[in-house]
Length: 237
Image (cartoon, rainbow, N blue to C red; front, side):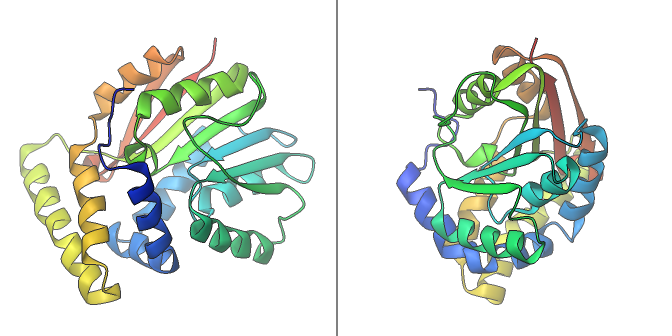
């Protein structure tokens, strides 16, 4: 296994259990509310039709799961999979509040070993989770395995601006994230970890190669907010 995140998986799971209650609040603060806008733009680019069967890997508190559930309609189904029980509890509350329990199944599971057969889904997504798994290549291979021919594999993840001036501002802002978390929710170490994984994760260009290595074709990406986030999409041949 080629580690893209060297923090032990059990420690990462514990961290997300600790921050689950404040995750949505901090996500909005850190992204300046942009994560919601990014997800809306991504959903417009995904070809998610009524009746589709989708899986949202590393679903967290379920925002993308819910967006997918609305897109597949009452005739479709969505699986939201995560290893954090506390994140899944919040996702369940949000799914119930949205009245989508009839089409959403939340599963505690391992993104590197999806408990589903080959060619099972129409769409596989992962949002802000790929940088936190031990082996991102393995996860992409699993997502590719899990969708059928012409199925879509999509990733929305933090990225790195390429413009030197914007990159300096981006780095300065993200260095403040743990301090913001300390002042807001008293979680300095946890958000120091998230700031570090953002800085250490691969570039958008490298992620294209990883998608291709997972057997996906027609791979392309789009960046948001001067490169602060990137959306990658690939198709299974």
